[in-house]
Length: 110
Image 1: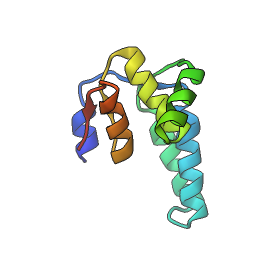
Image 2: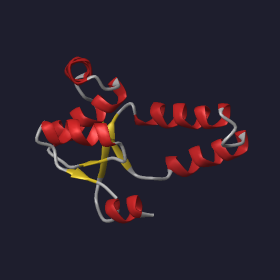
Image 3: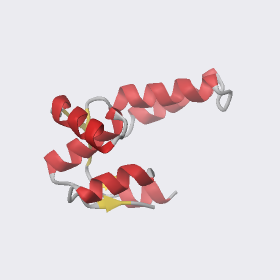
């Protein structure tokens, strides 16, 4: 998978909300019947083994960015984290990429 290749050998940094977003995504997949409960729980376990440095961000700045750019706050948290840490953003989302680039953030994409 291209995401694994791009992130290989790099320190992964994310806003502190990452575990909550993963949990929400897994529960949504179960709700939409794309995953079984057992699969979601197994995926959660796998995610917990990925070393990610969780960082606090300024939620007010991120929320302001979300409201000004018409994006979800969760996406703005990741953009704000990349900006704060002066590191590239890894995303599959076109709109998130566009906003990040418009704020001078380098984007890694598969």
